[in-house]
Image (cartoon, rainbow, N blue to C red):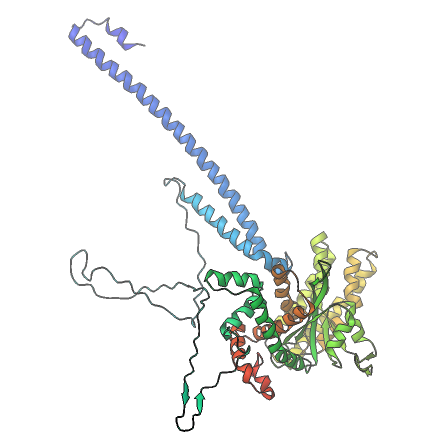
Length: 544
């Protein structure tokens, strides 16, 4: 219906007809404009709905990815990855988790404000900053002491204190030693203060700089060229040849301390032992050959400071461990490598004199036996492997319960709980093996434990022998990570020098000392220290 066409049929004055026509035309135009506005708003809403739906889908995808990363990151107790892999990838996982969290927050912040309100993501409580660090106070006072509302004087009612952790990069500075010289006019005698003894005579490096180089190279696993670059950023030129000279001289100076630590270690009657391959440059061939870093660790369940001694050797043969141990005899906890077997033979000979020695007593690592079943379960979800893992978990639960008790109490607890559990595990393994086909992954996992059963269970008869070789493996793990940086040892002498430094720094860490502080103090004292008091310099002397 066209109202303007019907207007002509009405008997109206021309002026009134024109006025009504104008009003009707305005209404028609307004209706058309409103229809277009509604259409535009519907299109905008459809676009917003599509955008919100896309963001919701992305948030859901990111949330799923976040849950996946958290499951991997926090599932270390289930050994989802090997310990070395966890160390390598942990930094990436943490970074990815934070990045995904931030992406989700940004997407949610971009959502229209008229949508349903969402609760803020809970934040984990921040750990308090270390109390021993110095505090630099910054006071922030209001611009005026008068109330901005009524103009009256303000009264202090409290303080809001927040703390932030900060750091200053390594600072290079120069010690200037001034030694005035005096003369006697009567007898013409010259007098001056003596030059203090230094670990490197006539060297330009102070003890703090030498410590920085040694810690960077052997604790932080930084090659010398990286230390050279760090110093160059502060305008300090330290050539690699100079750094190498310092490292070589410090290694020689610290050798007696490492030798003394090895002597103390061999006074114990139970030890851990493990080894890791180290690529060593083969001069003339342009390639590397395989050397080995052997680790000998004290038993934490026995009294005395914790000790770790590294021994760098050209190979993995049995003669290398025999050379280090000499005529030592006691309980030795090792993996199943054949190089250790000669130590446990009925008779063995001293590596130097060939005189007969009593055999060492073998302790096998229950963690290695458990790992066989764990790998089997991961590969096939084997119910046999799951049952074995559950039974072994009971043994570790006993160790956790006995962690902080005396040796006698631990022995009694093991007798009451561990020995019956081990007996039941042994019976179950034998019965299960009879029903298992030979040459299968299951039979091999079972045989690994049964063939070493006496060595695996010997710990439970005492209160001071360890259940596994994890302490030694934990000491070797940082060395394995360091190989990613320095790639290979330049020579056998370089490997032996690294073993000396790693022995001292590793022992300091085990005993709760700051390796950097200990090394700096030792390098200051060492040049004038009497050899008869060398034990006082070892990285556990202040633990006694």
